[in-house]
Image (cartoon, rainbow, N blue to C red; front, top):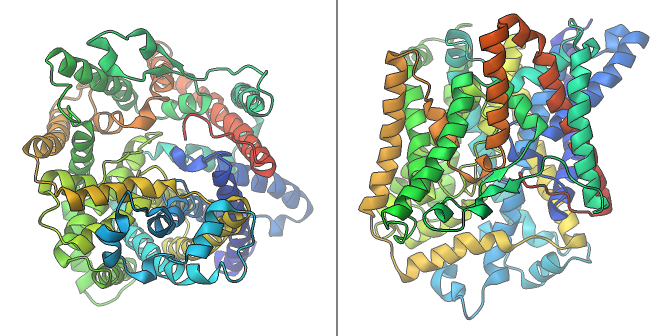
Length: 622
């Protein structure tokens, strides 16, 4: 077998080819609503690629064992595709193009955008060519060459900015991963399926109960997928809204409350610690109860009460603060190592620290050139990277299947807690463009990088080589992802309505500056306080069943379709552990991995078919 250094070009070549294919699949699929794999923590498209590589690898091992891919190499390719998918996902590059097309495409005399904020938009951030934008929105044309030219400068500008974001996440991962991976030995439940699939030394694919789970997951997903092409085919396990039966006050305040059975969610929930899976469905009901109590007290008439988005933002920030506090000695030791002369022990940390500083400088220069003050840059990105750390910690420790955090990012905190009057109009305008990575946090790259490094630690992969594949994947996916989106947008018509929300909000801020809200600020800080309190109680009392992560992740939209599946997996796992013991639990692990694998392969096939045929298969968890 060749060593890893010699095989690195092979890893990069395979990864780059698959990233290009993946970009075209994801971007074409997004325009026809043919599946959004990055809306949950484990991406079905990447599992599909890994499964295909493993099948191919079985054949190669029989014909030419020395040319077969090792587990380290498979994991490196998996990491490249995961990062590339996160960047090409629904909450990143798929939103970027509509946002930078939106201002000049959607401005009208009625919305007054041109008069209100066009003077604060740097031309190097947007496409202002009306002819190219009109063709972009209507389709039926070619991207080349006149239509491409107006996109090049904003493509390059936002590409540099996005690269800097990922670089900061990567370097933060290198700094934190040893603490979370080696010292605390967090479980990283999301990595269980790719780790087991890629392990050539275990009989993973020869376990009978794996195929039982696979058959259930694949069968349900295939039948549901056929429904999109043949509506007469019934669906299985799709959400049934029990909230429709609670249509009288105060019960109608609970809103949409679906009950659904999703095999992959049951599978992922099986690997979550019991206290977290319990906390997810318990706090989901808690948030519903909070709305009902607000209705009983007559407070539901207050705009946005009970300020759940603000509470959720605070909860995520609280999780990050707790995580950093627990890692304080490690962070101090890393800082001291970075100040010493270069050695084998501290080389990785020094490179990571330098990369973090370099990425931060790019972000600051980008924002300052676009008119954002240093105060606002520091405030926004401090909040953003705290949220990133919180999401990374959530996935590393507890493997939550969702963390969407819809409409609850730094822009919400800044406008609600601090108000908009104290910030410049150019700064608020740039922050509105940040909607493309701030609308929701489902396809967030940082936990993907963290999990890749954990997989690397389990397979003894070189940390710097993993960092290199992340950087290469980032650059290539930014290029191929935007190119693929534009290519298909000019053929079939591009999306632009994502721009309505941030720029209508910006126009409202300019017309009616927002004052700091004591109520919303209280809700935000109460979220922080609740998480800290729950964590303190957990540390003092082992029996305490309520996990702060459940409080944070259960309030947002994505928990609606998953809470009942998590409840089922919690119930099954609790019964097994209490009545049958740990051995039976371990014996049944392949069954639940099979549920995930089966549904994900079927979802991938359905998504590919929908992409090729232009049929919408955007299911309810998107």
